[in-house]
Amino acid sequence: MQFEWIQIPYALLTLFIVINFGLLMNAFVAKIGARVGRRIGIPIYQNYIDLIKNYALRSSITHGVMFYLGPVFRLTGGVGLLMFVPTIYNSVMFSNFSFAGDLILALYFIFFGTLGMALGAGESGHPHAAIGVSRGLSQVTMAELPLALAVFSIALQYNTLSVTEIVAAQQGGVLNWTLFTNPLAVAAAMLSFLGSVMRPPFDVVLAPQEIPIGPPTEYHSSYLALMQTNRVLYPIAKMVIFMNLFFGGADNWPVFFLKIFLIYMFAVFIGVVFPRFRVEQSIRWFLIWAVPIGILAVVLV
Amino acid sequence: MKEELEKRIIKGPDGLEFEVEPLRDYYCEAPPTVMPAAYGKIVEDFFNWARSESIWILGFGTGCGAIEMRPLMTPRFDAYRYGVQWRPTPRQSNLFIISGYLSVKTLKRVIRSYEQMQNPKYVIGLGSCTINGGMYWDSYNTIKRLDQYLPVDLYIAGCMPRPEALLAGFMDLKKLIRAGKAEGANEYAEKFDWYKTNQKQVINDWDMPDYNW
Image 1 (cartoon, rainbow over the protein chains, first blue to last red):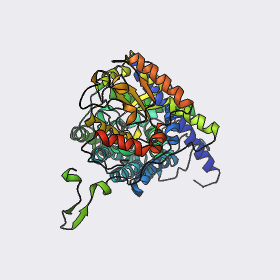
Image 2 (tube, helix red, strand yellow):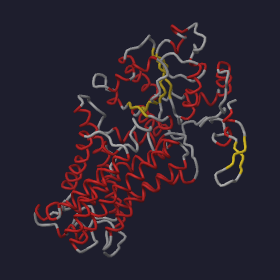
Image 3 (spheres, rainbow over the protein chains, first blue to last red):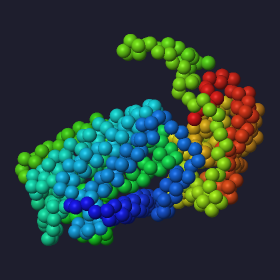
Image 4 (cartoon, chains in turn brown, orange):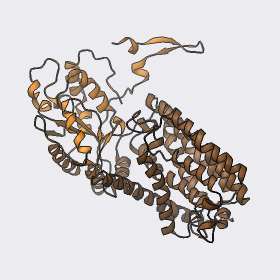
């Protein structure tokens, strides 16, 4: 795809829409959780206020250069992931900076933020942060394996590394989606998805009831606000890839919002039903259930 | 002074010897500074509104009053609808609730936690014990007046106050924050010497640095 300057404001517009959607969706999911527990729950705009408040705190302290860069790396991972895949199929405005080999770049960006965070949290010197980082890295690494296998399988199936072409191949009806043409790869990827959204079965890394509260223990004020921004952005950026690869992409924003919401609710439902895994349990779980499905998907494709 | 806080030579795993001075190496050396409202009135009013609508409480129950905070998370009282939530780390918290009696031993931890919180930060004294000692007024190891040791924004009287009283207290605190009157962090920085003197008068084994953030 040819680069044009107008793509930059278009990409920023995508970013703006996705961040606002993420803030509202997270509050909405929290609200649903509260209603299930017969509470009223947080106001739907609470995430905005938290964000403003954290940016507005007057003081902040630092533990070193990497401590500064941790949240920046993390946000770079989220923004980069979103910027290099097309959000809306067939739209000139919202194709962002997608190009022929963007699938590989996306795989790289998925891990980028985690590594930056590990370095930043490590420098904060807090023991809880160090424990959280070691748990988080081992779990996320294990969860990436089935996803990588699924992506290989998809790339072999469609014979391309371009997300746009993969979406194009799925057009023309629900039965053309990868979900039905290659269910094993989708199963492996969705299981891997559970491990990376930090929802209950796999949230031992930063659950407040475990080590309070893992890697972000020492982060505050605007550092924390950056990480909150990424926390709403990154899962959606990742779900955009899933939506494009497995669920036929989206032609317009309403379909986009609906599909992203449903993919997210998949993780939420599993999260409220199953109790939390310890790290060695979750690694074993990925090895036993997700990785063989991924290998099978690569072999059978 | 505890042994592990003293200056000493340590031999690393690679055989290299180096000097460690925990009180200097692990803590900040500068006293807190006054941080006045930096922006214009409109922006600062907006920020104060955001601060009042997003109160993050440090999950640290110092005394028996902590039992009155738990029901606030339940469907019956549900403090989350007012933008109140609990954080497990002082770095991310804005409100410190001193819940009930405060023993001298706990006061040490309270001071360290309070000083790690970021400006602006607020303190609520929950229960009569924080006002005048309450039923512990002649106890040998609890403090009697909390505002001699930390700048208190608001007291909620009672022994114990019901969770409803706490909710009403949050509402009053919100009014204070919105009016720009909850500047306890700056007050603490201004009268830092006075607070430190008071703290050191009751804490006999002062084995921590003066500045903890």
